[in-house]
Image 1 (cartoon, rainbow, N blue to C red):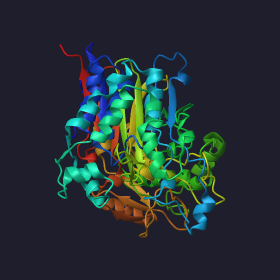
Image 2 (cartoon, rainbow, N blue to C red):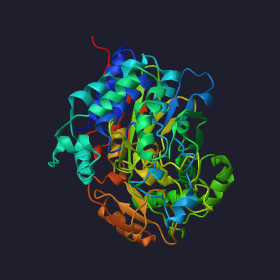
Image 3 (cartoon, rainbow, N blue to C red):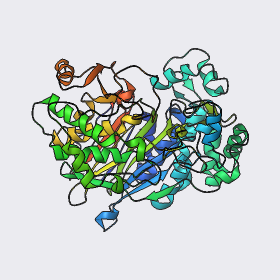
Length: 543
């Protein structure tokens, strides 16, 4: 069930709003607010529940990126700050070794090289140290109870768990489903419960240098050792931003691909995306803005790269000048797929807000599982390249390029306007751009903005999709339209030179988006129906 909670005026007993893909996680966040916690506490508690119920998308074995709005900062430029808690490769990582095996791209599943040090727990720790209000131990009560007592499997978990039914190491899921993969099946996660209890009563070292770290070292067969886990993955970073659509849009710098959202927003704003009735022209502008802002991602976007240096205003202006209303600009094609990731949003009555993205990359990540704790390890290492000329070449102690794109929008005076986030792999900037135009240009409500049909970019011919393999082949980018798109749109886009096809309904490739809008009198939030179960709720103090 998806729930909209718009139109409720804030009052003295309004505590905040939380939006996630899982009702159990959203309710955990709301209960933390009712217990005296703030938005950051609520986000951690909700994410901990998702680590139990949505292991196919996120979890303790994944990474975490987020952006925070802190109203207590008097300086407008310091109200928005980013946290990058993506881990590095092992000190033993070697592209040459994989090339010697005959590989031309990073292994996707079943190989430890696709695993970087999971940054999720370090991200929680750092968020709580800086902003936490409740005690650390209280944030995990809901997740531990759900892991111990069990939960009803969602549609998406059931579908993805069936795909790994032959994976003998996934013992908790094999036991729960017992070869009968039906939504609603009771799933217990005793391994995750024990891990969360150790974390609840200890510190980050009890996780990274404790049983989880030891299990990871053991299954890595010497690839990782304790030295890889001593230092925290989390680092506070200065957010990057552009002015567009009469707002300031903020996201994280590389290794996040958030820069592509900013580039496309700036280009679309300069071209002049309008709210008129001409839908095909508006969609054409957005498609071309994304292509012009993204086509060379593989040549520059890597850990430590500078958005301001590579895409300064003069370069964005130059790219906008290439736009044609009559035809699609010829550019290299891109590869894309949906990925497995979650976004969650939380805001409290003080105005403290967070957009948090947490991810395994692919469904169940690398499909490597720690045997006792039953934590699936992500495969965000597929963001590396084996090309020796790539800035993302696989190597020791490096962070791969990340698709995660948390975003915040502020008003000209610096006040918080929107929290937005989505899953969607390479398509995250594409989805977010459409949400922002829907809300800021077309003046849709959050519900309308998220429910409106979307497009994503992809190659026009079939291929074996791989995350992060953007712009590797020559050719034209194709456009995949949602089934609910108008019947005339595809034909009109084809006349402009776009190759189009229509997707099946509720295709996760189009993201599971969330939006919370802050006004003087209301917090209006909505969670994407495409998530098939997500919910956005407001919390109020009990009378």
